[in-house]
Length: 208
Image (cartoon, rainbow, N blue to C red; front, side):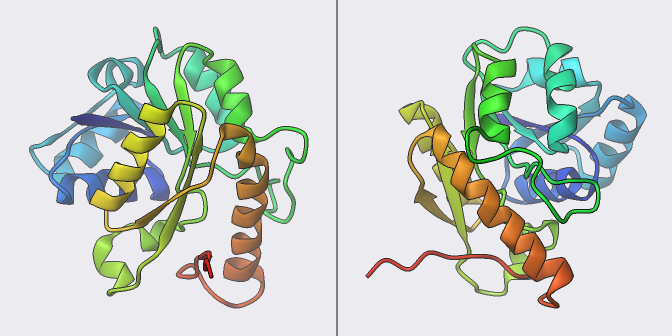
């Protein structure tokens, strides 16, 4: 299975490296194809990099490693997205990272689904900081990834992907539950960057 990562920032680069380390074939896409190509060359031969449209065409599963505000424009230029699994990892935060700009009655993931109605959008990984994406950074910690979506096959696939990267996958129900997962991601940002916990903190859910 080839997985595309859209975005070459800290999160996109971390996912591309982690996926390659887990032996997935990876395509990296960026609006600046030279950035994607340089990152792919740095990671290794099983990774290719180029423009956004090319990356979407090469993969059936796509990680949108983008700020929420950038997602709709990227999807508009991505081409045919029918049946593709789009993994929304974003939290719709304000520029100062202190507030959510979407919430309660909708979510970033639901907006992504509206922007790509023929795709299968899954919310996942939004509570995992970039520093915790590499397996070695977790040092034996069993971190949870909450997975929400309306397509059973797509959410099962994303749970398997999370497990392949060394996370504990938690079924978080339908896509509308992203309305609750994104505030959890926002609280994690508060702990990580404003309350002193640092970027290696992550929430977990204990079931009695």
